[in-house]
Image 1 (cartoon, rainbow, N blue to C red):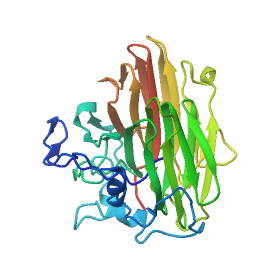
Image 2: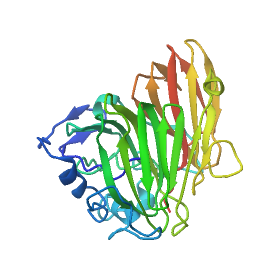
Image 3: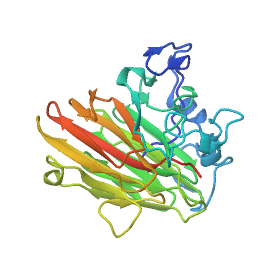
Image 4: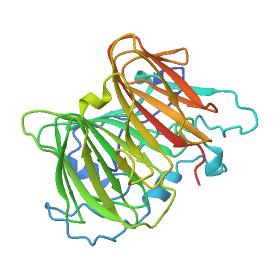
Length: 331
């Protein structure tokens, strides 16, 4: 659950052209300076490991406002949905957007190697700001013993999914925890929270996804939770890991969103039913090759689908996939 990764890579990035032109390189930026330049500022970067800020302390500028500021000027937030399109509730013709793995934003800071599916920090592409309420999808690798010092968030739902290694979390609510492969972590930043995230190990990297979702309710009480999945539940099926309800399977967030994970053997086929009218589904391939609605996808490809009630997925090899079913309107 890392926040505010301020990447140095920037340049022109156009969907389908698969061209990334970086104008800057990170050089030897140390972790302290890196965090100071993060998306949410340096308010939480006091030296040391203590988390002294109050539970309801908010950053100098709202996380929500910072991220909404990436919407192109003159364009209302609700006009930038999916691939900058609103869902058509009258004519339901399936719409899609493809984000190949090699078209993502990228920044390598030595201790942190991060790929951004959507605009983040110094990587900005007005055509790839968010998919509905799905604002951030970062694929991160953190070097042994390194990590992110104490920093703030507010009014954002933040989900972390470890892929390899161990990630140690500490926050201003008094939580200290370690998440590993097979765990799912969620933090509702609400009125304000400070946290730090570090690679627990000194001999190997930690790899994880950090995902930010705009909430449907602002100013809520901050909260933290994590769960451990059973791999048997993921075999050749999509298993729910997140929902809007605390009484449902998985963790929950303040948004009408559902996340599912599945580990599929080659040749398996499944159909996913969209959970809510007006939602779209963003599929992210963690490993292997799959075909979704006729579109061939490979490792780390992203594929957004909306204006449909269901999608069909076929595993072209042994594969692992994450589905994020999210509202297409940002309120």
